[in-house]
Structures are given as C-alpha cells and as structure tokens.
Amino acid sequence: MKSIIIIASTVFSLGAWAQFQDCVNEDFQKNGWTIHSSSEFETIYKDIRKKTTEGVADKTMVQDIEAMFMTPNSFITPDYYVRATTWDVLATSNDVMYGDIAIFVDHFKPETALEVRWFDGEKRHLVYNDKILSCAVTTRLPIANTIF
Image (cartoon, rainbow, N blue to C red; front, side):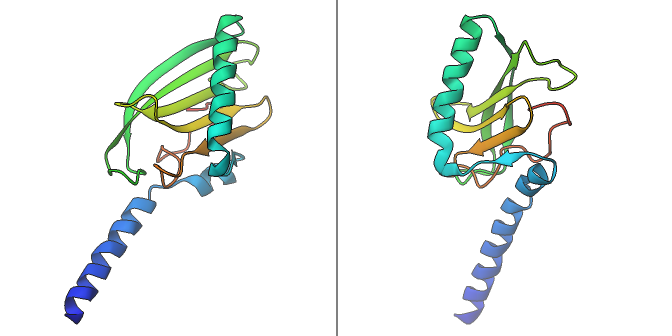
C-alpha cells in the first residue's frame, strides 16, 4: 500500500511540476509587466472589451491579428486551444508598441475569456482567469515592443 501511495504522489508531483514549468509570470514581471490579481479579471475584461468596441467605432483603433494556438497552462487540459485577437491603437507608434490590446478566449467557446493584455501608454499589463488558467497563456515572453 505504501508503494502505491509513493508512486501516486510522485506521478502527481511530476504532473504538477510539468504544468508549472511553462509558467512565465515571473518573467513577465521581471520584464516590466504588471500582472493584476485574477479577482479583477471580469471587471478588466469588460472594460477592455468596451474600449475595443468604442475604439474601432470611432476609428482610433483597429482590430489587427487573430490567431489560434494551444496553451499547456490550463487546469482543463494540457492542450487547451486558445484564440488571440489583438487591437492596435492608432495613436501609439509601432516603434513604441505594436498591438496595444490582446484578448485571449477559448477557441471553441469564445464567450469564455481567458486573459487580457494591454498597454496603457507607459506599461504593459496582464490579467488572467485563474478559474481556467494556472498562469499566463503563453510559454514565452512577447518581443519587447509587442503585446502578443
């Protein structure tokens, strides 16, 4: 019985370690990103969605890139399909920041928001849905002047 418990503990520990080795939250912070508390996720998500809708409507912002990829950082499955959409604020020079807002959603259920990133003119910010994700969706930091 003891050996079954030891084996099970080892397997579960390795699984947890494998899941968290891809988390780059600390790397984001070391590179100047502000990671907001997941308790703010819904409020920030709604505010940013409103900002993108209004920005596109008044032509101060354009929807830019849409892409699909997998993240290993989901509690649901290690191969969680994510759709990313970015918006570019036209007043921000591409040399300063290319893509000012990124919203990540479940690829198959786009009403399920996973993460929001935005540039406020000075700093890059990130907040993720901790009910679904263990950390940021990407396993690598974005290039210095991009949001995605």
